[in-house]
Structure formats: C-alpha cells, structure tokens
Length: 111
Length: 115
Image (cartoon, rainbow over all chains, first blue to last red; front, side, top):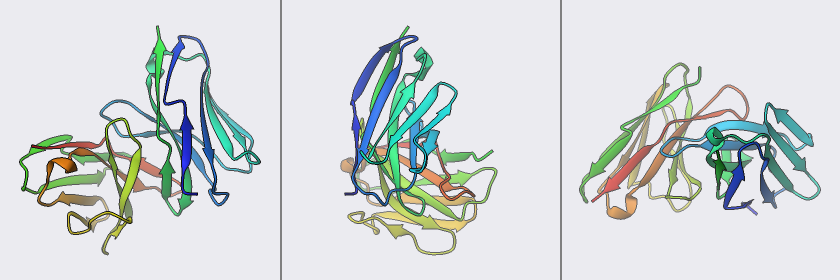
C-alpha cells in the first residue's frame, strides 16, 4: 500500500507539445500529492501540488489532474520546452512531512 | 527564501574511511530535516528524520550505526557515513521542513563515491 506507481519511465516530446506523466496509488490515507522536478546532479524542486479534495490545479504551463475514485493523478506540461527536460517525480504524503516518491519519469523535450 | 545548502557537493573517499555531509538551512530555522538516498535513475528513499536537539529517527532497514545523524542547531544537520564501502556510493539529499503542513525544501545533493 505504501507505493506510488509512476509511468512512463521516459518520455520524449516535441517542443510545443504536451507532456503527460501519470501516477497511481493504493493508500487512501495519502492526503497531499506533490510533483517534483529534478535536473541532473541537483536536488528535487517542488513544481506543483494538490490535495485530494480538488480535481485539478493549474500553475502556468503545469496542471495536475486528480481522480480520487480511481486513485490516480497526472501532471500535464503544456507547450513543453527544451528547458523542461528533467526527471519528474510524483509523491504522496503518508505521515507528517514524510513522502513516498514515484520511480521518476525522464522527460526530454526536443527542440 | 527557503534555501537549503549541502556541503560538499561531491566527495570521493577510500573504502573504510568516514565521510561527513552537511545540510544547512540558509535563511530559515529548520527544527526537522530529512536525509534521503538516491541511486542512479531511481527514486528518493527516506533514510532518517533529523530533529534538532534529539536523536534521529531511522527508517526501517537503515543502519543507524553506519549513518550517523546529528542535528546540533536549528540550521545544521550532518550525516556521517562511517566505514564507507563501495555500496554506499550514492546521491545523498537532505531536505528541511518548512512552516506549512507539507512544506519541504530540498538541498542540491551530495554525490558520494567510495573507491
């Protein structure tokens, strides 16, 4: 139950396209779902996050869609840019300040 | 604001030696910090929770005698890898708890290579 399954493992998108990364979970006690962006050799940086009482959250080109009944959530990157090329991790909060992370998606945006 | 630094960014050490990694919150006080380990192309795994002025709490399967954590002040936590072996080679990342209920700020990570 303490798992967050993330797909795809890698993703190649053309510049200007939409990047979509999906995550699924089992534990309904998770109550906060952040997405992190990590560049090579750097620590993760919070990109956007959502609570389960909200179905969608948008910040600029980044949108989280949340389906509570299906226990799935996804990150959409609109108008993807080469500078978005990074590894993206979804996560779920399972205890105070404790997170379980997905396995990561390596995104490459072609110029 | 909310910047977390780590030092060193990279370290190479010989098998059997000990290595200390520092994690600092630069512009805020962090009563709680976290240490993660990340293997190449893999996810982050929480190793331990570091609380200022008290003993660290280790996750299941993490050897507390091997990974010594000290949180001596509100802005500094250290991770010491004792008697390092090649299998300890990894990317170690710290994070610090923010004010909000879910806020957590990550450091840039330290690449440890044990030869």
